[in-house]
Amino acid sequence: MPMETKLPCSRLESVLREGHFAVTAELNPPDSADPEDVYKAAGILANVCDGINAVDASGANCHISSVAMCALLTRAGYEPVYQVTCRDRNRIAIQGDMLGAAAMGVLNVLCLTGDDVTAGDQPEAKRVYDFDSIQLLRTARTMRDEGVFLSGRKITTPPCFFLGAAANPFVPPYEWRPQRLSKKIAAGAQFIQTQYCFDLPRFKEYMHQVRDLGLDKQAFILAGVGPLKSAGAAEFMRTKVPGVVIPDQYVDRLKKTPKEKQQEEGKKICIELIEQIREIDGIAGIHIMAYRQEELVAEIVEQAGLMPRPTSNDQNKR
Amino acid sequence: MFRWLQNYPHFLEIVYDLLEVSLHPLKRWFKPGSRSEPLVTMIERLGKETVFDCQMCGQCILHSTGMTCPMNCPKQLRNGPCGGVRENGHCEVKPEMKCVWVEAYQRSLKMPKYGYQFASLQPPVNNQLKGTSSWINMFHGIDTDLPPGWTNTKDIPVKCVKEDFYANGN
Image (cartoon, rainbow over all chains, first blue to last red; front, side, top):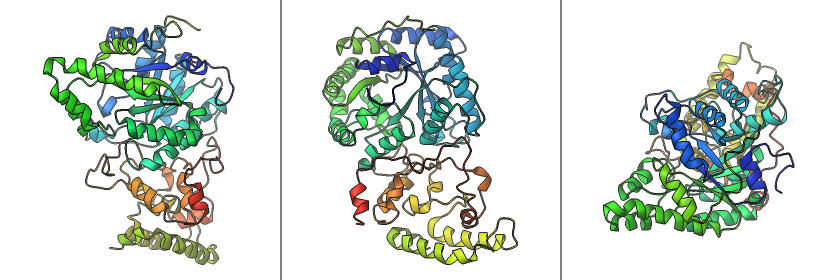
């Protein structure tokens, strides 16, 4: 087993440590005060994945907060991955929120820098970035392992986190990216969820370097995938969403498909990618980001041959 | 005006070393709260603003970031680059600007002495030091006075593909 031996607290961690090919999926936060809206979307994902990522204001757009969404999910016995970004809160708020999340049963935390405010629908907002993702990771790890806040003040019952980080192998400086991953692991990352993997040759090259550094043995790497809804959506994603790279071949393939069949074709591409990614050494699972197409996730997991999931999702551990 | 100097990081590295050695004897005049503090701060600001577009964070890490000021990154990352870099190497926030961290990385490769420090884990910024002189802070260990909960990250080994490169002093 990679990394320090400690009793795994989170179900996602157990699945990974037992060597299963893990599946996580992104839950897009609703713009609603009705918890049913969260549960509706979560219900679709829960049976087909081992962890549900609660997005923190995706693309810097305001939605229901990720910590609240996690609280709703743990209450219903689901396994959330709490996404924390450094964009909107300073170190005091972040540490408080993480401890609060832990008190509500959150065990998986994904530490992110976060898209800039200018990517969202309120670009006039003040950006915070008191931490960067690596300092955030390190602080979360300190809270867990040393049982103290950054100030050194003691936490009576420290959180039991399974810590994650993101990686984007598809943007410059390419040759630095594996080392950046190494830095994140040194800071405390135990699992990694990558940006959308469409550019497979680049990803294979990246994984080659990652294996050379032995990083795949130190953290569980989950490759990011997702269905493209249409040629237009693909074009939007690669031009407007920071850090997303989609090679022409996939956009062209969608453009050649009649409009009403494009979503189906997008799903097909996604399944093909999963099959190819599974062949790459050092990949511990996949992370499905199906923006506003959660209903497709079940079909994708099923058709990619990733069912049944190793543990049942109504398992209540505590 | 002197920004082009940044493209000679190996030269700046030597200047950095010389400056440190030459300022050291003046250490006893370089004190926080002393009468010379405003003057020192002004000189530092003038020099570093012209060359590095320095933001006076008061805890300078230029030699660890390819002689490129990380505080010019719109997200002010100390452990960059983020995942939003554009395919042409430009910034996610300011498309017309080259990513500060892409430049920092490329320049660090030209620095035989301190280049390897690009991989080190930088602690969170002490916002209380903004606007103060990093020279004074360095001589009195103020810039390395970290929050008690921040375990020393200086000695954490970060595996580095380019290790041989730096070791050979290329």
